[in-house]
Amino acid sequence: MVIKMPIIVNLDVMMAKRRMPSGELASKIGLSQANLSILKTGKARAVRFSTLEAICKALDCQPGDILEYTDELLDADLMDADLIEDDSIADTAIEEIGEQING
Image 1 (cartoon, rainbow, N blue to C red):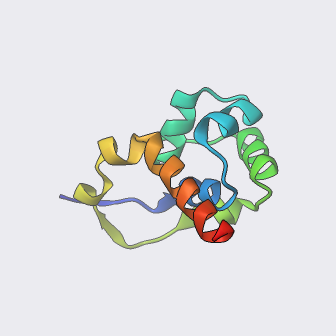
Image 2 (image 1 turned 30 degrees about the vertical axis):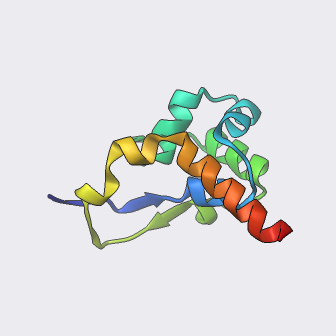
């Protein structure tokens, strides 16, 4: 099945770059882990500017670092919710980047 998803949320990528687990980010920005997961998976229908500001402040980044526009069609099978929602994926990526940096 092919669906059009014009806005891509790259929050996991920025969290991994900053080595910040989901729980820590949720706590810093005052969002529940469930709502952060919805945002990370691109299932959120809207994002408040205050939430975007808090995320950018916590991750020391710009909105464009976590939100991306594309007009390409994406395969829904590649966006399996069970795989994307698993916070251990982000935590594993954070650990791997840490190991690469620390040698």
